[in-house]
Image 1 (cartoon, helix red, strand yellow):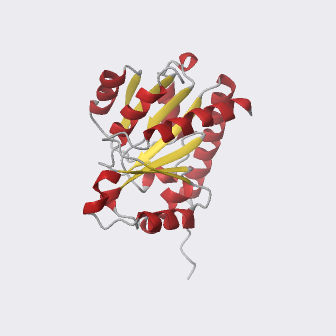
Image 2 (cartoon, rainbow, N blue to C red; image 1 turned 45 degrees about the horizontal axis):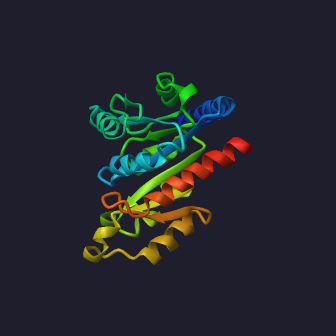
Image 3 (cartoon, rainbow, N blue to C red; image 1 turned 90 degrees about the vertical axis):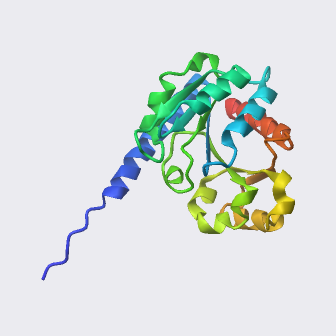
Length: 224
């Protein structure tokens, strides 16, 4: 009996997306726009972190924000009202991630000529978003203390593709069994070059370091 024929659909989907992402990255480079893809699980504090960060970037970088969710426009409204930074909401139609083409559609509605940096807040999920290149220059993610320091072991791809890991909610570390040293060890098991910045979006601790990282990233990228 002949073997069942296996069609590698997944491979072609990812290959096509990678090509789209590379083209998008080149286009953004020509226009001088740096795209950051920010990922995390729901409730990690992405939006609060963004609000604190955007306030510290005022006068240093021209920033636009794209908020991706399955539904609602709560986060985009919250960011715009709190910071005045132009923000748009992307609805994914039930999909748990953004790919390069979806990102491009969002960017078509952003004033790129007035932006040095566009921050894409991806759908809250530690699995699907890590699988798709959005065309961003860098990937960043937020790991919150209540999630545990072992998440890099459980979600290896997410931590492998991220250039920066923000460890949020450090103010509650005394109440959780969270080991920062172990967290660093596990993250660097997945990505030895990953930058790790402990933060507390509620108090603002560590946010200056994140803002400085962004400013330096954009500066270095524009000089390449």
